[in-house]
Length: 321
Image 1 (cartoon, rainbow, N blue to C red):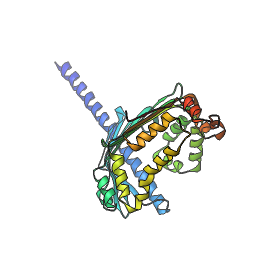
Image 2 (tube, helix red, strand yellow; image 1 turned 180 degrees about the vertical axis):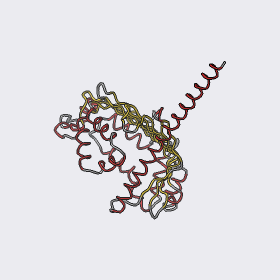
Image 3 (tube, rainbow, N blue to C red; image 1 turned 90 degrees about the horizontal axis):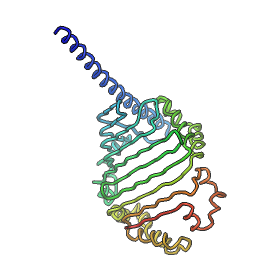
Image 4 (cartoon, rainbow, N blue to C red; image 1 turned 90 degrees about the vertical axis):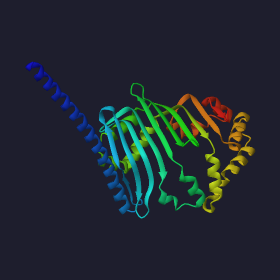
């Protein structure tokens, strides 16, 4: 009996210790996120004193961290601007696949309930203020990297409620240099990251690494349920933005006068501009092109007609099915 009691006591102590370690590690992980936000705010403050940007500061109500599942959440984030107050309210930010000092091969970022603060709505013209009153932006970003072959899959969904949705997906090849650049950046502490990201070396290294990556295939999809029409009406009713509302008739005029595009592509684009409900553009390059090649006019000149370019990209266009 004494042995059983002793064994039970030891097991209880081990479990209690395990639970304590579990919560302590999560607490430290959450504290690290809070520290990084503080470093960002300090960096913004320095740039504001140098006149590089307005005084911006981030605040939040709560941070939830689960180190063991690589799941981190920030609740009720606010973007504050000096002299104006809160600019944006964000209901929640969730990050998966993040571990301090390392770069995971898979990761996700979800941002929910991004709304223009009520005080900022009062500064907008009436039509735009009414449009933004109940408008909340949400987005979900995901990446998957395969270290064995350097393939990177990027996807993102952006939505204004059920009124407007934009999805894109790209598959990139030969991304090892960019991944190594990102890995080196991740290994820096928050303060070093902020300092390095503002340097010329950062821009040059990023450009060099990205230039070697190759685009293989992708798609862009838009679903609209009245948002674009409401935005057009709001822009048209506002003196400061009235010129932007001319974009639709300008697009219609351009398409009606364009004789270079194949008839199937032209008619599909005309149908979407006339009634913007749904459009999806998908492509798969016959041969992947590097980002350096995509900026090289001599490379692009090999496709002398739109038909040749469409054949090379295997372009598929779907409108208002």
